[in-house]
Amino acid sequence: MAEVLDAEAVRTELAGLDGWAGDPAGIGRTVELLTFRDAIGVVDRVAVVAEELDHHPDIDIRWRTVVFRCATHSVGGVTRRDVELAKRIDEIVRGAA
Ligand SMILES: C[C@H](O)[C@H](O)[C@H]1CNC2=NC(N)=NC(=O)C2=N1
Image (cartoon, rainbow, N blue to C red):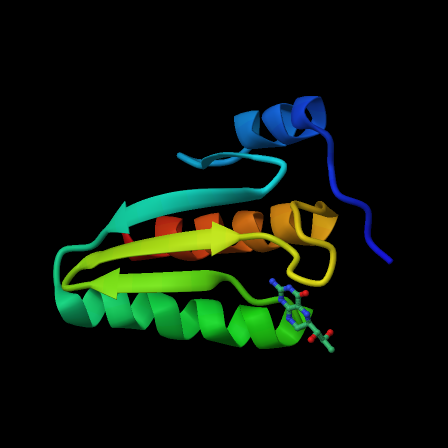
């Protein structure tokens, strides 16, 4: 079973991500797109990656602002799988900007 990263490991990983914040309980990033449809497009691409990784972010969509939150529910905290998912979300967001 995946291990929850400690606070220092989470801080180190956050430094390598774009605009994420958090702690061992979870990491999150807020993204503002130009339009609602752009926001949905990003979420749709993230959905494809989440299925590929079999690891799924919590997603909050409000008009053109999307909040992604990553934690591994089965262990109750941030694992390497969340960091990998966050990196893939960053790639998608970069492509949408
Ligand atoms: C069976 C399957 O691997 C699990 O249900 C996965 C699916 N996606 C998941 N996503 C997240 N974020 N946490 C989980 O514990 C999780 N479990």
